[in-house]
Amino acid sequence: MNSFTRWWEVTRRELFSGLRRPAYWVLFAILLLMAWGWSEGAVTISSGDSTVGGERSHVTSVFAQSMIQCIVVMGIGAWFLAIAAGLVVIRDLELQVTEVFHSTRLTPREYVWGKFAGAVGVFFVIWILYLCMGAFFNHVVAAGEDTRHIGPFILANYLSPTVLFGLPQILLFAGVPFFLGTWTRRPIVVFFFPILVLLVTLTFLTTWSPDWLPPDVNRALMLVDPSGFRWLNETFLKVDRGVEFYNTAVLRPDAGFLLSRVAFGLIGLAAVGGAAMSYSARLRRGASESRLLRSFVRAMKPFARVPGRRRARVTEAAEPSSADATLRDLDMATEPLGFWRAARVIGREEVRELVRRPGMYLFVPLILYQSVFATFIAIGPFNSPLLLTSGAVAVRQLNTLSLLVCFLLLFYTVESLHKERSRRLAEIFNASPIGTGSILLGKTIGNSMVAGLILALGVVASWGVIVWHQLFEGSPVGFDIVPFVVTWGGVLAPTFIFWTALVTALFAFFRNRYAVYGLGFALIIYTVYRMDFDDSFGWVLNWMAWNAVQWSDMGAFSLQGTELFLNRVLYLSLVPLLVALAVKWFGRQDRDATRLVHRMRPKPLLIGVLRLIPWAVPAIVLALVLFFGGRAGRE
Image (cartoon, rainbow, N blue to C red):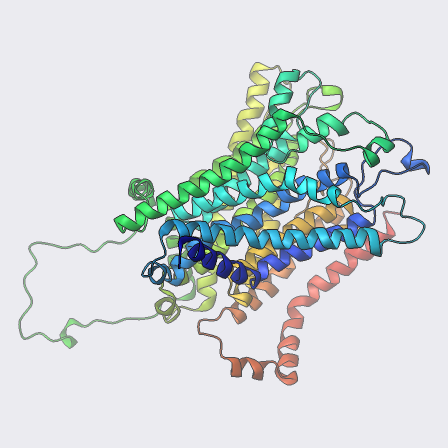
């Protein structure tokens, strides 16, 4: 067996293994629903007189497909590529199969490149299926009179955007997380890169374009945009060229843009090469962590000590015990920890873990920078400056904080619940005399400290921005803490509580980090998409309170205060139900197929449902009130 054959065997096995994981089919379901929505005309290029009965721009044109594909890969594909590529080596280490691999003639480079190729291959399979189903919806399913947005089938209109906009992003968002996962072997760090790039791209590179921006700077921003959307928008879409142009013209990239796309792809491949070098070096040293991470952990140890922790005191003057003493004479006794004490101990250890993790020192500054920076550079209509009151600053950061902290809570909650299994301590931990409720509560309290820390630092950073404007830019308003308490405490806190309870219940049910990641990403993406484009069930389904708060210093929540209050109470009322399900599903033993079959019988199922109905009644009543009240309107 030669080198290519060994590499291909690793690639093939990783490819077929990935296709059996639920996260990728969750991605396919998301893409399938989006393709169906776009075939109905949900996304088109606004041009000409299409809104008054004229010819409409085609969703099947190369420009529309380019716009769709560059956004989909950036906004959705980046997360699933991080799961597929960034966690692949970490998973093999947890399963202890790398020793078996390297007892053969398989070299570290063949292993690393094979794993990367297999992980990327899974995404390519899903992406090709998405393109096929999109073409099927557009040219076969779409029929009737209202199909003016559907043009003729041209294969190049689907494939050329994939090559120009999709392929460089796929290599970038797979290669760099693959390097981070192989180098650090910390799952949390893997997601730092997609979050960083997504924030910079979606909130700055693709949206910030004031009229006074010099053309050279604008051109540079086009070339450093990984999605390619800024170049597409500034070159072809920003100035209307007419429906006929968008429907029939050919997309011709310039030399500079082509070089930038090639550079992004090469960065991803270079990251894989770096991962192969790091993996080979660590295999030779026999170390489990890189030297940089070991130095970081040693440096953080003094800060990870929790004040008030009891320590055993050893006195040198203690007299030696009698040689005839027995264990009975020592009068030792043990007793199980109570519910609250056990939860406090577990929560304290989770906080210590958070302090020692590099992710805390990467994500928290990044989220704060993004939320504060977006507020600092905000401009009003006609490029006019905004008056930054405390209420306006708090509300402008709501969507950003809700989205990013929910992502962060998803990462930390899943990895916290999976921690004992990954460290091969699950059997010992699950056999300890600690209640399941105490375990889940302690882990939840520890992970919630992340959200609390971000909100507290966000208030401090917002205070600095407002005071700066007041002292140096002549702003007539000062800082007020009340709007932050009302909006962040009353709107964001219920979101984080509900989301943590939901993620915990999902992990308890599936017991699979990849399934929970896939469903979590899908739920966040679906919520944001639906609230932006289709809010027919807005208040009932808007658990993130996305675009739900409108602030006025003359009367906070004066427009939709009742609906917002009922929405927050609705999702808080779901928390007891989710907690009950999580405690019921959180298995501390391996699943027994026979026992599962017995539980699926009609009588046990009916009894279980009847026991849970009282927990669900308040949420059902509130959802009905919100739904019918919203349809009836204010009058």
